[in-house]
Image (cartoon, rainbow, N blue to C red; front, side):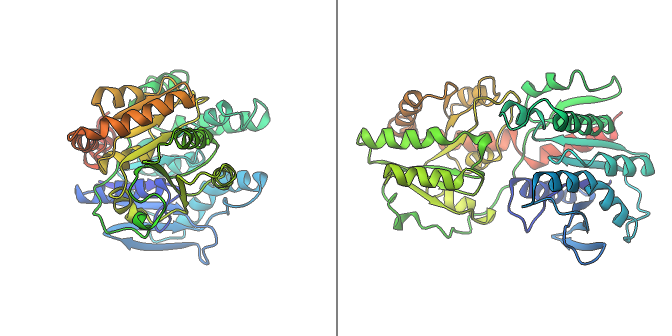
Length: 398
């Protein structure tokens, strides 16, 4: 199948979305399909740039800037992005290409117009991969109110859904959200996150040379923002220090809107059991986790839409059991408990997290099979091979 794969991020960027689109495109090619990744390229000095990365065709299309600018300019840039991409696509060598399927990845919610144009021109089916339900999650977090901006984003969201023949959501708990949106001709299904196997090529963070050396290391690697609700993890680190649990340490690797706040908080409390590092290349993640013992999953309890963070997949692949502080109703609760791969808190209290963290350190890590169970979960639920077969089947079966 000739497949157009649309997203807003791709390597060399290091975001989880970039890694997912890379893995998806590579698996599509491995299974004999011909994917072309289309991504916006603000600041590109020409209308288009056609590349090949590991056997995958990548078309970068000049578009408006959407990062590191004010809210109004960013919203304008996001709204105009698909139109700019479509305009420059028509100047490219792929202007007359006909596709057997169109796949697009959300976030962003603004790709509906380009997806619709490609779908209409080719007479093919389309598949929308939903990873964050926006603007609902922003409303839940108090980042947006039910005013004109919210109504604007809802209209854009609705249009995006109307274009898709099939919508893939992360978990069963998300499916009822779409009951009011889809038509009888559309289908909503669970499409798990995915992560390709990656070799251990080492890591630029040598934990043996840090204050965490010799401790049981709880690691968090990823975005540190409002949606993650990570302030309680500083409370946990302080509680364990006061309880003289000098055998437990915490490693935080990444960036985000709350990263500096968390660093400042740890410094103000004098937490010598906490170490921060900036983000690292995704290729270094296996080498990082090889030095750690437990992965941390953190989501703000106000979330009403439910997702499985990409970092959870990488913990499973690395054989790390998890300590999860997540929102009630999240499907991750049952998965962790049923597969016996960690401990879960949904009450957002430091008392519960302290008890669970100590339980993992004192009991779960003595289970010689817990790492194997984690890796089995990765292979069973989060394989790119399974995901590609599911998507392509949906594109071909009416």
